[in-house]
Image (cartoon, rainbow, N blue to C red; front, top):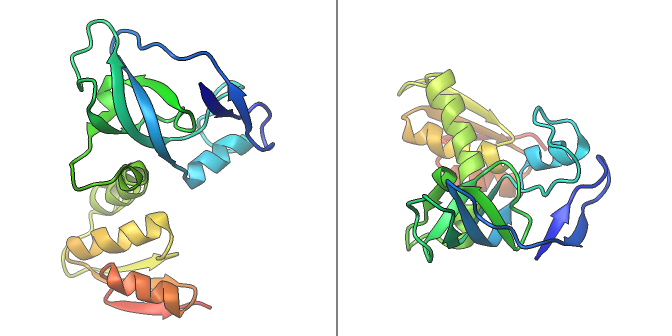
Length: 190
């Protein structure tokens, strides 16, 4: 199996041939299709993220794929199930072993690519706006970097929560993307 590995912090990843992983108790072996890459992945590869796995490691916080096998005593999701995974590591590989509890079945109307880039950005925005900021209907939300991954999901979630969303992005095209995502007003910072 091939996997991208970080062998030296701050250096580019290296493509390596590794032994095929085997699922243990509570784990699932997943054939990985796409992997979503996030700013946190870049920080981790540079050694500047709060989580610092031992070297070498395979980056990739979130990915999507198909369950191939379950470890002993693991009840699901069943082999053949399309899943998204937010495991923290291991997404930039052909196969990965992940805690079965971290796998979420993918609905039929969601592609592997969409599922692989969904959990971190939306989860970050939802946590920040709903749980931490406790954004309420009618409040005003200013989103900086509104056309980036977390910024765009903040625009969408803020609008769904009933806030008046002002999106700040660089350039008319990015402002249009933010408007399409639900921004009520935009500021072009270009």
